[in-house]
Image 1 (spheres, one colour):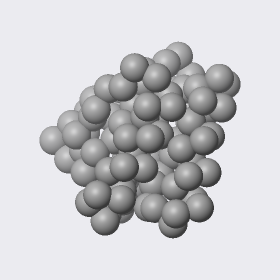
Image 2 (tube, rainbow, N blue to C red):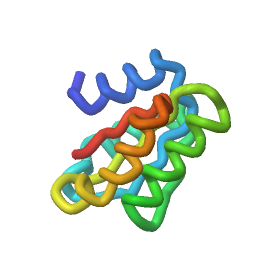
Image 3 (cartoon, rainbow, N blue to C red):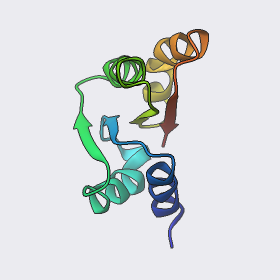
Length: 99
């Protein structure tokens, strides 16, 4: 089993229903694992990493359940920091994964 597959299985165990993501080179294995788990997690493609984080934060608040976002490494990780801090400050259940 690949680490990427394990991560997606773990998200299913955490009862995460949606993952907001932006495909990128640093997260390609994670994107591939997400495609293999589409029956359990709904992938929602966003146009910017910040949008991924904000959407995951909003979903966590609206659903009162964990949500997740998946972005690539490097600039993708820094673009999601504002939403990550917002979720942390509001104790919103969001899992942020950066390839």
